[in-house]
Length: 345
Ligand SMILES: *[C@@H]1O[C@H](CO)[C@@H](O)[C@H](O)[C@H]1NC(C)=O
Ligand SMILES: *[C@@H]1O[C@H](CO)[C@@H](O)[C@H](O)[C@H]1NC(C)=O
Image (cartoon, rainbow, N blue to C red):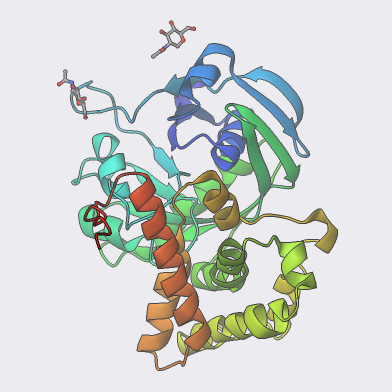
């Protein structure tokens, strides 16, 4: 029955992408090709080394295909993929754009392939619905705890939970989009090692995660404090985190998304204090990487303000995050500055 398997291209095989590829392969309903960048060489040579609370210990694990770049299906005469799963970071302020990255495997006129975005933040589907108007786009909200401790070495210490639903594309029939989402849930969950569920409330899922990701995440990145230390720091929670989170709750409400009463306290305490967890933006700043601040912070801020919600804390966090991003751009040579003038008497 091998030929009834779905052909899945996973773009991005880091901490989250590797576990996604693993879940899809162990279910036996999909043949997975993974596109890797920085860790291509070690993974192509000897596979992943995975230590996972869901899957146990795997040595030299390889998905069906390991690719160094997104295949050009037109010039390589490949059939279209059934699913393309994007698990890369998403920084729309840093070129190349994510839709041009996917482009070679997803022609603009595509109607066959379903795109799955396992990425954080708001409005991430919008560029695709514009560039690929007849492509079904699914939302994946991942609540996994997983890290790549060395290239190709994955340590997953918190269970994989994935909420999948369809982003609304006005050019596509709602029932068709929802059926694709349900089918993907089946492919992903079939192996029984993950908690993957279909969700009809994609926007709610995304706003809820923003209570953490638009607030605690950038605050840790800006202050250099992990989620344990920000709770211990003088004024860290009451002066920064809680006001920011309350602004997100109000913005969500103005957009018709009612979050649970206790969501702020829940998110403040979601990481046990004494694991001193570094959220993604703090980890990225420490590694000199770009941060995903536009989709996590910029979009909810713009939506909230447009709906008339005062968001003074988020505004300042956003501008600080933008300055940090500029600092990284200068370090990476993406912006040039005028040479420093000699101090002459
Ligand atoms: C990947 O590994 C295979 C077999 O180990 C090797 O033949 C191939 O050249 C490698 N691919 C690249 C692009 O390095
Ligand atoms: C196919 O397209 C890729 C980029 O999409 C390009 O790098 C490659 O050179 C092309 N190959 C041929 C044979 O045209």
